[in-house]
Length: 362
DNA sequence: TAGGCCATCTGGTCCT
DNA sequence: AGGACCAGATGGCCTA
Image (cartoon, rainbow, N blue to C red; front, side):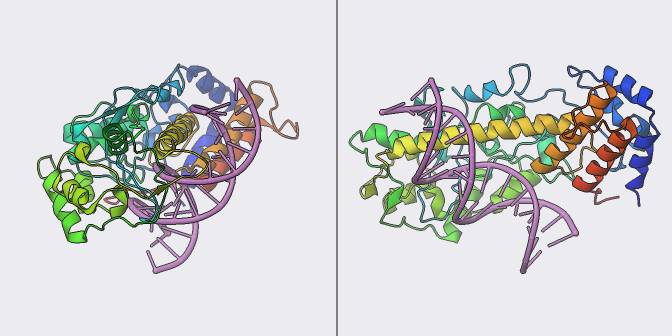
């Protein structure tokens, strides 16, 4: 089993070597290739099993400032956000620029770009690749967590997608503009009695084709182009006429909500939307922290898939190893395990938690 | 195709 | 009162 290779290499490192590695790999250093992967560097260039610490140059906003930057969502590009919930649930179109104070500004381009289902945050390295135009044409291979950044569709050239953490759109323009245009609309939209008008699959496909036709096509974009606009994406409070506007790419700022919104918890729909945005930001912050942690722990390869749970497990094992090497014992039972045992445990954890993916062309 | 993982929405609870 | 935090529900994406 190829997996044994890194383990062997890992175990071949003496404590002194590891200590040297650790010292070299200071917390401020992004060059993690000198870590556990030092013994497996010979396997780089295709060997997925090579223990590797992915570099974090250009690491996302999670730096010295931590994830604080997440809150700084002011004046960020907007994007359409597809509601993943059932169509019977209130859905929305995120297309506003928001400030940290919750102020939103309608953005005319909100409904002009193709849609993406989800923002998936990945390492900065991957993000950098995806964001550059040439790379857009060739997304990072063999990366299950390849970024799917909705905003790319709105703005072809995007800064480091890692910064997408910071610029999460937040509050929807559609609703915002609607509220602005109709201040009397204060009813929450969460619970509606009327189902929204449904766009046909054909209409949706046409719309997306039109929207994506003007932008370079990458595998990613092609994938997106195949997607359709579910009716759930559209605010349930929109009329059929408004729906047609959305489908035709008209300025949705002119759209207006109408009737039959109900209250819950005395919270208006606008506030609910804002709360959703905050919640997304909060979760993104957590995800960013996981991503940072994922890069801080050893792995066989950058392509190794580590779930959040796996990241935590590996991190715990890794911390214990480092603490033992530092003469401390952070084990739960204060059993003072040997360094060798700790290293073996780390290796085992990585093997257990990691899902090494082999490149398809290899 | 089933299962795992994850993003998103939502409402409840707690805190400031 | 409003925001943070949390957990449940839901659905999309990906892989075996």
